[in-house]
Length: 267
Ligand SMILES: NC(=O)c1ccc[n+]([C@@H]2O[C@H](COP(=O)([O-])OP(=O)(O)OC[C@H]3O[C@@H](n4cnc5c(N)ncnc54)[C@H](OP(=O)(O)O)[C@@H]3O)[C@@H](O)[C@H]2O)c1
Image (tube, rainbow, N blue to C red; front, side, top):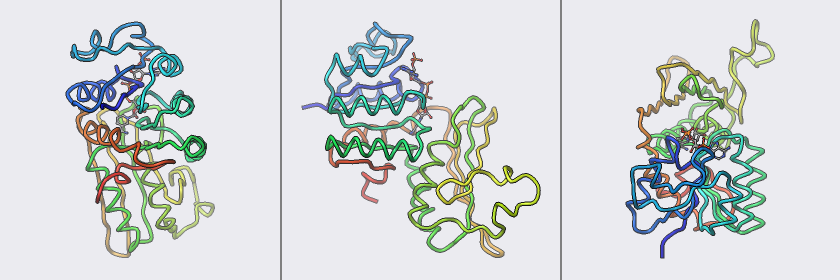
């Protein structure tokens, strides 16, 4: 029996890489895809893979009404992501969230809906294995080093800030402790905004410039010593594919919300 997927964002940069990889598996079948510009077509007419025979719909509601699925995969944009996820849960599907930009409040609402329906939601700010390790190593470091700041780098046309990777990292570190500040933010002389945003107990700085793809860096500082842990991704969506496929296979194994790929890995 294969896992039936509705892939929201199947024609996008990340979604198309996932769709092409899913077509090569024998346990995952795309039953519907979502894209406004290609609605009404077959996915294999848009992507170079004749095995992708599922229809494309303009909205999640339409796709979910027309084609039952086991897992809804969200890879669109932050404006519609939460509504898509809630609609999928209403339709009885487990959900994997790859889209960035959802807030902790959004996740709290999603968790409540998932628990009500006894479904699993796996939200992964970054499916790349190097990011999973960055998160793990950072959690270890935060147990020993009380001060750190996070820097998130992305291309200039990325609209959401901070990145999903930075949000997830801050969230994870909040379960260890908040980062200490030697000078409290309100005592900053000059422009307090230049100290970044306080997010779940971490200072976060987002850089948006041409020339970057996606990078995340965390700097831990102690008197006379520093530790920097950094992830850089290249220009293809390849780093995300394996983690996304694994998430699809694992999301039905629990109920409620889990954040981070390591939640379904044996690390
Ligand atoms: N978690 C991770 O590891 C990871 C990795 C890569 C990207 N991401 C995140 O995934 C999201 C997508 O990134 P991307 O680079 O693939 O974006 P993209 O290339 O712009 O693709 C977006 C896709 O979503 C569809 N879409 C957008 N708005 C829609 C709407 N209102 N209704 C229906 N379909 C809609 C687009 O099709 P139409 O325009 O035709 O509607 C397209 O198929 C972003 O939030 C990004 O940050 C996460």
